[in-house]
Length: 166
Image (cartoon, rainbow, N blue to C red; front, side, top):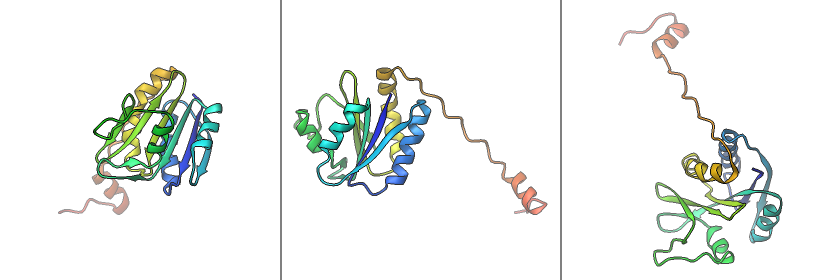
C-alpha cells in the first residue's frame, strides 16, 4: 500500500503524523509523501490519489458532537456521497471515538481516511480502519507487544539503595 498524508489547515502535524506513521509501521507500510493544504485541498488530494493507494487527510474537527473533520463536507459533496437525515454520510465507514469522528472512504482500489487533527484519538480511530485496509490491500497487522511490567520496588531499590517503608 502506497500511503500519503495531507494536512488540511492542521495544527498538530508532528503528533498526528507520528500516530499515522506508527499505525503504518504495524502494517509494514510507509508514508511516501506528506503535504499541507491551506484553503482548497481537493486538487492536492486528487493529485495524491493518482500516485497513492491511500491518502490520510487530517483537518481540525468542528461541529456539534460528534465533531467531524472540516475537510469531510467538501469531499462528500465532490464525491456525491449521500447525506442522511441524521447528517451522516451513507455508505462509508465511520470511525467514532468519544465525541469525535473520522471516516474511511473506499473505492475498489483506493481509500481515503479522513481524520481529526487530534493525536489523542488517532490510535483508536486508526485501529478501526486497520481491518478494512488490511483486507483491501492484502496486509497483515502486526500485534503490538504489551509494555514490560514496571516493578516499582526494584526500581526504587536500584535508584535509592533500599525500598522506603510507607
